[in-house]
Image 1 (cartoon, helix red, strand yellow):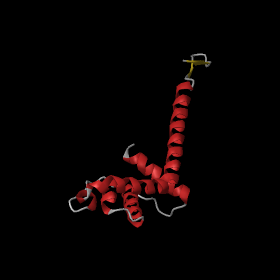
Image 2 (spheres, rainbow, N blue to C red; image 1 turned 60 degrees about the vertical axis):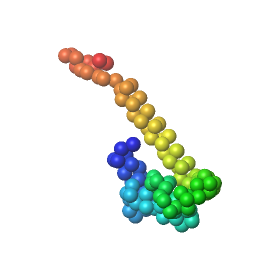
Image 3 (cartoon, one colour; image 1 turned 90 degrees about the horizontal axis):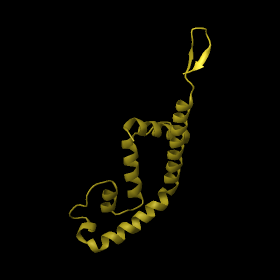
Image 4 (tube, one colour; image 1 turned 90 degrees about the vertical axis):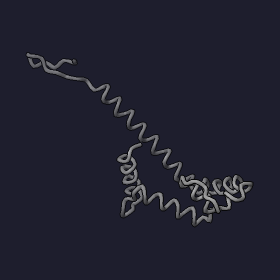
Length: 124
C-alpha cells in the first residue's frame, strides 16, 4: 500500500470516527507507542514491536530466558486490546477489494458504443 492510500484510509477513518483532525502515519505510530507504554509493556517489548532491535541493557537482552515468555504474555495482552481495530481493518480491506473488483468489472463490461456514418450506434 502506498503513502497516498494510507493517508486516504486515515482520512476516511477519521471522518467515520468524527475526529476533528486527520492523523498522520507518524501520529498513529506515536499513539501505538504511547498505548503500549500505558499498558505497561516492557520497554524492550515496545521497542521490538516498533521495529527496533533489542538493546544491551534491556532486561530482555540480559535475561534472554525470560524474553520469550514476556514477549508472549505481553503480545497476547496487546492482541486482546487490538482485536476490534484489526477486525475493522480486515472489514475495510474486504470492502476495498470488493470496490476494486466492482470497478474493474464495470470497466470491463462497459460497452464501447460508436456512431457509424448513418448515426446508428453499434458496439465496437
